[in-house]
Length: 126
Length: 139
Length: 108
Image (tube, rainbow over the protein chains, first blue to last red):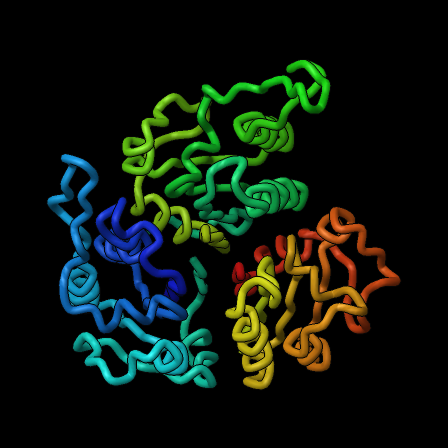
């Protein structure tokens, strides 16, 4: 069973959870043999240009020691055999086109999305 | 991998109770699925683990002018129980797994009977063994 | 070719990404698939005759099948005769039928 994971939100709980929960879910399911593809849409395309870990949160004397490292998470996802795509138009309209994309992340134009959707047995929109 | 169950549907849901209209639609979908004779498997992720919290308590509402009994406030744990009973009376399976890490970080460990603890591999197992899966993300 | 059913809870007045969701439904149709959009929750808001959304009207003018959830309509007191043309009234049963038929059912 091939599943397309569509992630169109970003930074929703990355500080609290210290990861993107759907990227994490995808990595977890991949570790048990899940055949998965990730499509970063909307604000999710911003993940593809991140270079460093997220800033640490400090609240009073409480200091975050393990902020999310989204580039690392995406790299490990790709290394585990999960193709990662971004929607070109969503990327461009957010002014991200001049920034380098994480190696291995593939770009797909919106009009070609039916090809990606047809390649999957199920589409899980998160 | 076990054989696919032709009449089983998996649902993954992320919202806590009392926050979003999605919660009502999700439960309506479960009810409709039982009406269609489908076995149901639910993977409750993130805030959705609170749906089965046994400590939920109905309250009165002075603005409505009703005490707790009169107000008869909806509780998601009761909706789950009702669907569990509906499934049982129709000889259908109704399984529910809460993401264990999501439970721990929220401290919602006291859940009603029939709602168990698991993790993402269970979602993949549920989905792999089901005829179809619907995921409902949060926003 | 596949059968798609989108459960459309988002609406074009609140979520700008809704226009892309409508467009994807139409692109999948143009690619030869069968596509149904089931409007639920505030997703039914553009269904009123006088609602103004050119993106939604374009969806209705395509051959995508558009169904509005009766319960969501009742909540908003939208009667059947207030609906734009090409909208059928139905229930969540459509989504369950599609899931049981093995169609690709996607939440928006």
